[in-house]
Length: 97
Image (cartoon, rainbow, N blue to C red; front, top):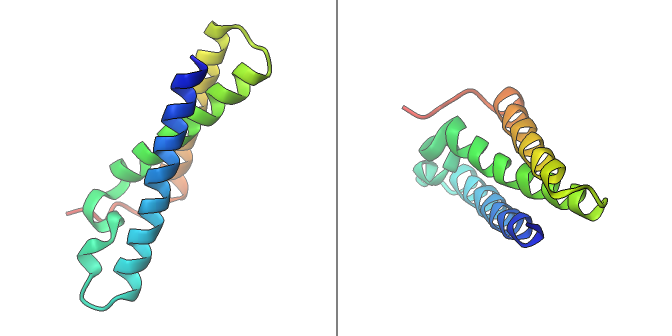
């Protein structure tokens, strides 16, 4: 299960970095506003990326703390859910049309 958590975390972090880069381009380059992932994917996309990062972080943390696999999976799900909640509550309003 450790490999699963690591792969999901790496994928989530890659998408997070891509999200930040695309947001910067969409904000700073005139005429490229549609490139902003917040405009393209909205709250659902932001929550998906945050959930992947939270799932991977929660799972890896619990695994390396020596928790049994069942509890580590619960921690991964809780971490993913918490990050989705944070992304929805603290993120901007849904701008997707």
